[in-house]
Length: 421
Image (cartoon, rainbow, N blue to C red; front, side):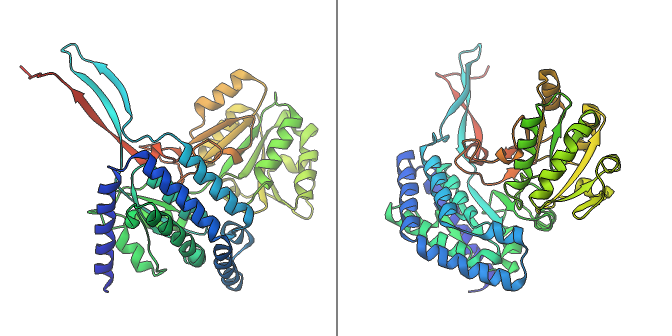
């Protein structure tokens, strides 16, 4: 079949499935999620074998440690996928909810109703869990979805997609509610991003080059995020024991993720007291440090300690590398974050309520955190069950995109024979 004919068939089936899903009651969507969960459990060994195949290919191609970490599926990570599925199943269905209902002086009752967006196209790299997270969130929010995973996770994604299809079939839902493009040819992506008659929204999840490509070529609105250059700022009124735990966790709990800290800012008043200890802790974890000029007056250059370049302040390393800067005060910290950050996630450690409130008000990011690690900026941790991505856009959806982010609203009006004079 020609590419154009194949994609036309995919789009037509997706639109028909979306028309069915909008009429599907919550209990039936939940039955499908439960069946998908059982199917993944039954096929767990097969899924891990498919993932091993991807990992072997990736190692031969020279994928770095962070990329392999994002690609890897283990018993534990599959259990987390299943836990996310269970959470999504337990969440209230937003579809049909009425909000902001009020009476007008003429007696009309006007409000807003939650409705599905329709057909979602998702283009993603590396992470096989996205296949399940995206399918589950789209199904629960009444959307059909077309999935196109990256070549590095092809076998893993296909195996998971087969389990999803099996679960849909078992519960009588249209199997085309979730379609997986079984080709790694980029021509399919170029065709998908132009299918404005069938796809309502595109969600790209991947590296900066993918996002930039789709932003340039797509004829369809995007819900997207670019890089995750996240900061932790240790304010002069911080509890230092708390600050050290948060900073170490934000950087080292996992390196190849978008909510890992990439730059640590510390008030200069604390430098003598806390900097040597933090440097020692990071070096013990194998983190390479890139320090500002003022930091290097306290900490000497040595193995794994380098002078920071200007480019380091805007860098998303996704690796055991951290830039560190001493700042005069909160003014300099806020200015630095808003200039070099990626509007993803930024945290402050302080016991000063007024300073914390100012940080919350003035930092222009999708998640702003007080006295906790940036690693919590995640749909699962926010109680969304999972996320379809973390949006750094400001329109429609911002931050972790869960069920509500995959819906729209329409006005509903209730009258009783009203006519406009």
